Length: 140
Image (tube, rainbow, N blue to C red; front, side):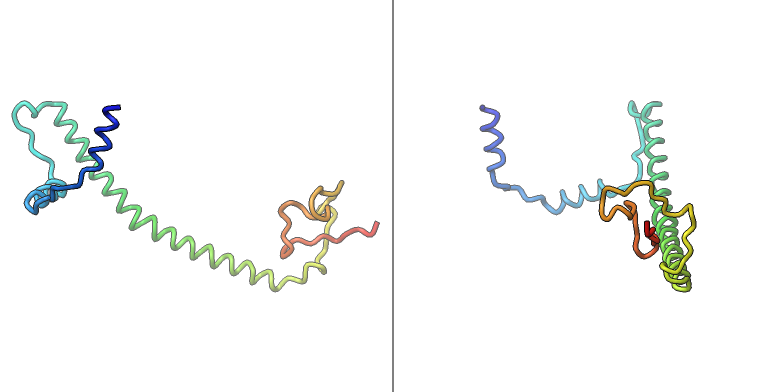
C-alpha cells in the first residue's frame, strides 16, 4: 500500500531538471564513441580481454551483414522481382495466342469426376480459376 502511494507520487511530480548542454554533449560523446577503452590495472585480465575481442568481432560481423543486406540482398530482390514480372507477362502473352478454352481438347485424364464436390455447382475444384480451367460437361 505504501509502495503504491510512493509510486503514484513519483509519477505525479513535475520534471524540474533540465539536462544542461554540457551534460548532454558528454553523454552524446560517450554513446557515440566507437573505440574500445584500453584496459589497465586490475581490469586487464584474460576474461576482460576476451570479452573485448568478442565485442570487436561482433561489431565487425554486424557491419559486414548490414552491408551485405543493403548492397547485395536488396538489389538482388529487386532484380528477381523484375525478372518474375517479365516472366509473368510473357506467360500471359503466350496464353493470348492459344485457342479459346471451349475449343481446346479435353483428354480422358483431365477433370475426372467420380462424385460432385459439396461446394458451388459441384463441378469446380477448390482452386478453380475460370481464366485457365474449363470442363466440358458430359451430357449424361
